[in-house]
Image (cartoon, rainbow, N blue to C red):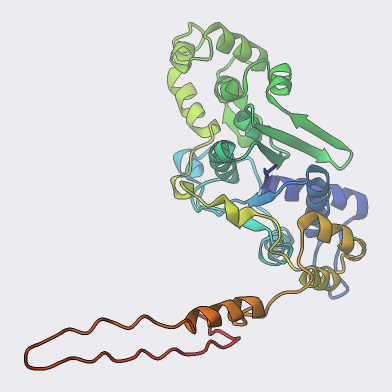
Length: 344
């Protein structure tokens, strides 16, 4: 049965890095390259893949140019910028580790990873019997439905699986109504200020009284005087569909394009010694190839098939009759295929 795992790159990277910084003070290679977050992210991701056994994996990241920050100066203004080592490690994951593992990363300029995950999970739920989202961010819970669940990752030993029932139990509202609750009560982590005097419990009560219908919520006696604020907040806290991802081919996320030798080389160079020792298990979990075919080289079976096709007798074209002259057909020449092909 096919199963898609969507990974929140920044959230898992940030949580994994902070946990290792507290536990070890930081990891570096012998040459001084910082690898704390890269190692933590990779280790935790591989563990989840081994447990969940997905057939497809996509890692979603923030590509920059966040439209919400352009719409609101206050949005996430409480967050400090990342340092050089953080950015170096984050790119190390995207540019080297994930490609070696054969995992595809997705990021669209102008949108957050949350939007990418929301879009892919919504469209994938039509094609996949099961979609799982790996994150540390509860904002993603609005994506949950009968086919989409969320793994809230706090640490390797503290993981919560959230389906529709679990979200209802934790929040008191269905997944789709979580943004309305946040629009009313605010979201401190994103620096979104809610309506004064309305906390999460009151917000949940109002949302349920109004049947989760937003127009009724903003018309509520406690909300109406602050309707503009709530509408602005709703725009900020609700995940947006990314049109650039419409009609995306999910087959590109299928496991099996990674190469075990390349993974081992990357792990050795980054001094991920414990992961390098697990290469056999990782190979099985990600369906890694033992070797790779060099660029431009066509596998023998494929080259042989192509040669046989080209060497089939070509049908002779019919001759046209003319009262004055007769035309003769030129026999087309067939060329034998080589076992190598040039890059296009």
